[in-house]
Length: 95
Image (cartoon, rainbow, N blue to C red; front, top):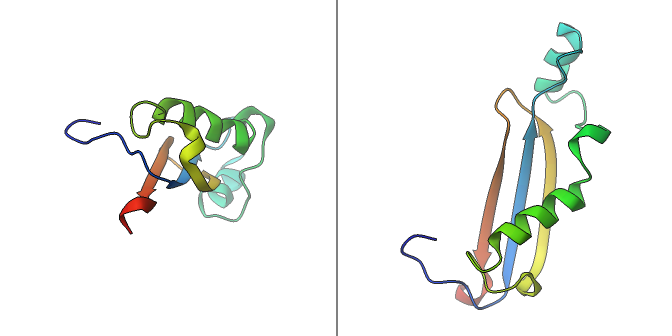
């Protein structure tokens, strides 16, 4: 992380994964998905635990020393027009 030291204390991590609705869906289904009326459940998205593992691997050695430092984790999947991943990390050693 530019300008920041690697965290060496316990951390909490929150991840939110955003996926576009399938192109094959009807406009009604897409509208419902983007309006939060449909859960983001689909095999093509990947299991939320595997998505979280990928984020932890990316953060190891960059944000924190080792993923063993993660003592709390929450993850969510949602439909969105804008695909992406939101990651919030809280250094529990500073609270």
